[in-house]
Length: 201
Image (tube, rainbow, N blue to C red; front, top):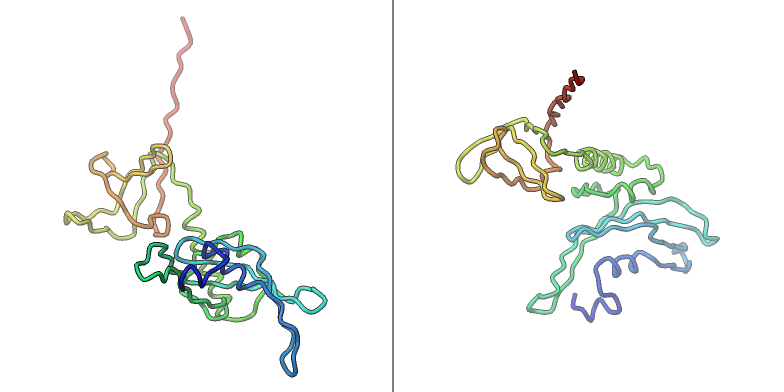
């Protein structure tokens, strides 16, 4: 859609939050339906929301996850800057990088696709929430091949502020691995050598 089509919302998150917040009164055989967003996070390519369904009295029925694939290009030449595809967790989305702050708001579910999606999300969190310290050695299950033709499985971590650089264990080279924290690897802590102090004579 164009920016005019998004109006009055300026961002994908604001637009999607509004789309998932509504009340539809009962009409004929169609029952009352209402949603409100409790928490949403937009990452740039995906939107995750904990959405509460409630009844006419405002009482909670349950909280489920809504996931949207987002295409956002504010400089699109044809003016069509925004598009999205929405699905709920019962559809078993492939995208499983839902933040913990959204997952922890969901009520219990028995739907097999939703349960599988939640398990995949928590497995991803186990990977991305790992802390890698300066000097750690990380080891991948299989060697990775780089553009220069070399293959390596072991790397040493160098941290300079927020910047993380990988080298070979002996300090040679500089390597970049995309989506590093989403990959499976073993962290090998380097032993700390205690300084020895000798008493003064």
